[in-house]
Length: 338
Length: 301
Image (cartoon, rainbow over the protein chains, first blue to last red):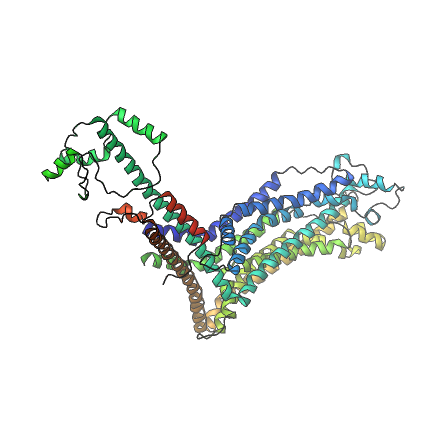
């Protein structure tokens, strides 16, 4: 139990840091993904907006969902939410606490993506280049073009190589303008997120500290209880399997002895332990038969109580001679010697 | 108990160093962010000031807030401040001490950002190129007022077609950069002198109060950590007992319903103990179903 206790304490104290670590890794992954992504503005009037806003908003949504998927506690939350009430009431504040802490962690990577995108400026430049105020920034002396023409020219702003509207509005001027707006938006977004995080963290002790302590305790409890239950079931399954297999081999050797009807040699005392481990199977043919039987006809998941002594004459340690009613002849002779 | 003692000593000695480490990391992060940020002055008359000053101050506020959020002590201080008095009086000196140490640490990264910004100079050039007196510079001296504003606003953009070979642009740029760097170094000098004086002169004033405040703020911090550790330990034991009770109640129910031969007590080996009387596929399935559909009440008395 000491080993389990150490492991659980490790998990408990490190569950939060483990989740924080995953959070940080996802944030780094999102910046890496952005720098590796080859942004390619289409430079066509209606496609620019869709592409730019798509790149700005779709990956954060994916990262948010990924944040939930990678969080181990999501299944715990779902289980606690959907379980029937039974003998234990459900506390909605615990569920809310668990959901909020998971959502907060999942929000970090999308927020990083949106900030990096806005601070870099390419997305906003691509999406809103057709909305640049040509009257204030451009040349007023340029001959009037139709609205559609102007849109087409402006749409090429992000693509410097094919831009042909230098007389209408200088490419650098437009790009600087859009980038300035994008970076301002980016910094405002980061400021907003940080302020929200600060408020959430600092207002909590002012208002609901007692409720928070309660929810935190019980959400940790549910987690630990689930892990302990899994450990106990694993322990049980191991013992079950061990007894089941032992009984299978014992059954096999009973069958063998019944089939062959030969006197088992009385094992000398020093070789008894090794002989016991062999479980009555001492040659290749028998082993092959045992393996075939294990594959073709697995024993039922029902452990019978060890009432009858095994028939091959070994006095297994601690084996009480309780049911002498139907012993094979050899067993009776063995016991009578004792 | 030895293990607990080691853990607590670790926490005690390292709470300050953890906070200092986070402080240092934030300062490094601010430098890195400045170097990787692509500063792009809009070079338009109304936008320059907003952009330049915005880049100088908004990230500083963000770093300050981050410094407060990442510091665990700020939560401890807030809890101590807002708790009901109960049977333990509140000591304002302790709260003030904690507040000042948190603020000092949180101010490091913003100051680093502002100083780096000033020493680099781009922000100030962008923000104040329109406020320079055009008469001082040959290239802008004889230009009309409206046009001079436009031209001065374009000074930060070296590659603009109007500014490409303009020597006066370089003169304005150097002038502003000189002011910016002078301001940066002055701020750095003032802050370091202030920090030096504060550290040197502190023992002259109220040393006893300071020692007491520091001791009790450490105490509050450790007490909270010990409480959390104890709660973890308690919930583990609670869960253990709860599960054992559950298995026992299942075992009793099975005995009541199944009429099977009772197992020999003396002969039961270790495996049988671990099996807790559940030796059948149906029994295991029933146990798992009961665990899901009817979790036991949270009562281990």
